[in-house]
Amino acid sequence: MRPGVVKTLVLTEPLPLTAHPAAVYLDSLAPGSRPTMEQALNAIAALLTNDKCDYMTLNWASLRYQHTAAVRSALMKKHAPATANKMLCALRRVLTEAFKLDLMAATDYQKAVDLSSIKAKKRLRGRALKLDEITALMGICQADKSPVGVRDAALIAILRCGLRRAEVVALHLKDVDLATGALEIIGSKNETDRMVYMPARAIAAVEKWLKLRTRKPGPLLLPIRKGGELQWRRMTPQAILMIVRKRAESAGVERFSPHDFRRTFCSDLLDAGVDIVTVQKLAGHASPVTTGKYDRRGEETKRKAMEKLDIGYTQPRSPD
Image 1 (tube, rainbow, N blue to C red):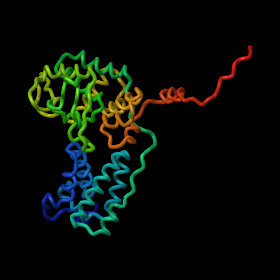
Image 2: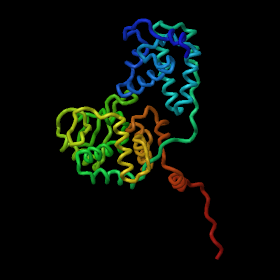
Image 3: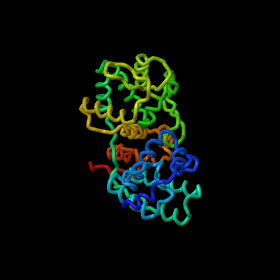
Image 4: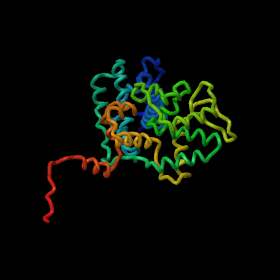
């Protein structure tokens, strides 16, 4: 942006949080979603002002169609379609708040938010993990007798139950019931609390970690210093990613993302005949349609399913 244009986009004086469109929008989100969307808004603010503003100092109400169209173009070049569309969604929501707060005229608002979504490629990303890959990952963790190995085994066991990274790091000791294997997910992405149940082997991995961690209140999973000292604070989603990548490399498993555990979770349950609505509730998806997109069972599963379809054709007998 040109210097003169940038100047007009900077707030001349701070707005109270209750009248700041970005602050009002972020406050409406579930705790797990706020950091991601705040980061998105900061990136948009920096893009519009040549790194002069963050989300609090940008004058969102001064944005017009030429600004938002430029943002869309820049995001389309820099990010994957899903990420770019998520950032555009945040932008539209902030402008909606600016309109509701009487900071934008209706015509300016309607033009500014009139942005088409960025089309994604048809090819689905991610993959389902095979059982031998999961076994290899757990084996590497169990072979590591240090506190880190015990914690990572519990971490992978929990990820295997279909939780998002943000949900895993948000778990507290009070959210776990070892008697039933229940994990209570509070403040999930869709703002709907849910209960997930660990199978027996996952319970055993978490139980072993708790013997080391103790029953002291606080986050379930903890960062660990090199000397084995537990740090009584939450882990970060980025730390989960790094741990999974490190264990995959050690186990000789093809690189994958923590989110692929969710894909595997959905696929395995669907493959086992669990109905899609139940899988949807366990995964915490807003709609069964979303759950269906996570199905990575492959062509062989489809072929076997078609074997069960009766078309009423009688196989002719071979002549004697």
